Length: 97
Image (cartoon, helix red, strand yellow):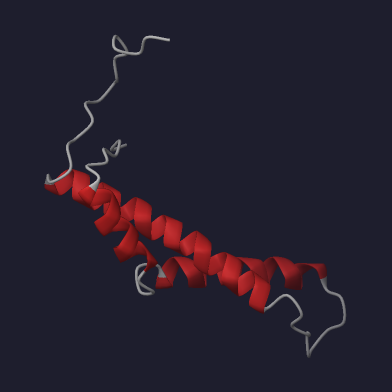
């Protein structure tokens, strides 16, 4: 399969430009948020509810809470920074939406 003639809607920025670095940082932060969410889900899997027995809305609320908590803390655990540095050295190109 020859992909040399594939055309993109937008040009892919090269690593080193401010736009590309911010896009790469955003993607690595999103990846870290996923990892943190998985860790929170596993850590709180057996958490007992003190106020109600089996409220279906409680599971949804807790899941949404953990997702927002992981998004807010993304970039603070170091996974994002390590991944950003590794991908920057590999000259990875990130598509900017």
